[in-house]
Amino acid sequence: MSKTEFDALKEEIRAFAQARDWEQFHTPKNLAMAITGEAGELAAEFQWLTAQQSVLEALSGERLEAISLEIADIQIYLLRLADVLRVDLPTVVRKKLEINESRF
Amino acid sequence: MSKTEFDALKEEIRAFAQARDWEQFHTPKNLAMAITGEAGELAAEFQWLTAQQSVLEALSGERLEAISLEIADIQIYLLRLADVLRVDLPTVVRKKLEINESRF
Amino acid sequence: MSKTEFDALKEEIRAFAQARDWEQFHTPKNLAMAITGEAGELAAEFQWLTAQQSVLEALSGERLEAISLEIADIQIYLLRLADVLRVDLPTVVRKKLEINESRF
Amino acid sequence: MSKTEFDALKEEIRAFAQARDWEQFHTPKNLAMAITGEAGELAAEFQWLTAQQSVLEALSGERLEAISLEIADIQIYLLRLADVLRVDLPTVVRKKLEINESRF
Image (cartoon, rainbow over all chains, first blue to last red; front, side, top):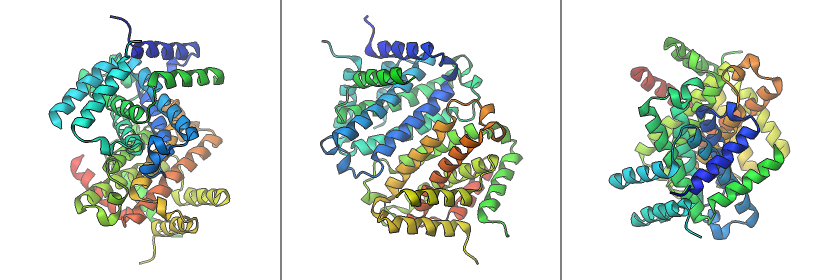
């Protein structure tokens, strides 16, 4: 089976961290904390918007760009956390969807 | 080009939401808020652990399972948000990594 | 000057932690993480509500009770963090309001 | 009974919002979202610090100042949310402590 995009990105992000000697900071605890920080920045983009103002058609190009980069930050740390915990993201997403299927 | 795993998951999650008539709730604002909620649950798993207790080798199987499902929850809402905002996750991740390259 | 309610609560919360030998867990880092966890739970109460459904008059008594206890959790950890960092909450609140006065 | 510091601050923050015509933005939902944003900023101050580096004695004056202002931001939005939901903070804090007493 060919490598998924998830694995490819995971490796690029790992290489980025290794090149800067940042692996020492990337404990699961610290990465979880970094995710809350980035999630907070994403929330800040939306906090004073109405639901209507938050949809794609209503967002300015500039704000959509800012939001995209916040989404990227969360994805980067999530991939990094999945990497250090040896969690396969597509696998756990499908597992969680199955649990949700039986619940809702 | 073949569909990436990101796109495949995005479509599965969209179908899940459509089947339950949940699209009405999935405004970008609400999804950003849901991400902070799930990030908070992930943080709660780690909050009283030391850095040493948070690493893969030190986590119990039960806790690692719980953490994996919290990671999945964040990934699910992030894919859903990327879907409603027409953001391609691998593209914005690589864009952000390039910005970080020039910064650090 | 008489003790403020902030100081009184701070001392009650400190006594609660001491009685359970929890001070060892209450590093500023861990308390900051606990605040994000509780803030996430508060967000979860509101995430699928419209702005209109979130106002006092529209909330059920049960949900208002749940929200009040989430607010309390954040306040408890904020008082605990202020305690271990020797930060006087009314003082820093007024300082921040002054900064905001000059900004907005 | 004389007014508590909580009530005094609540009124100062309300006046600040009224003077800027910001009350329209201060729905409970938006305020809960703002709290997660500020909690994320507080987390960001601590995310790469070890537990030992996060204690009062180890923090630089500059960082302690930055942390104090993040704490203030959370307290301000928490007081504002308590105000719009007519929640008395000392009352709910003591109620939650009692619940915790019976639990732990």
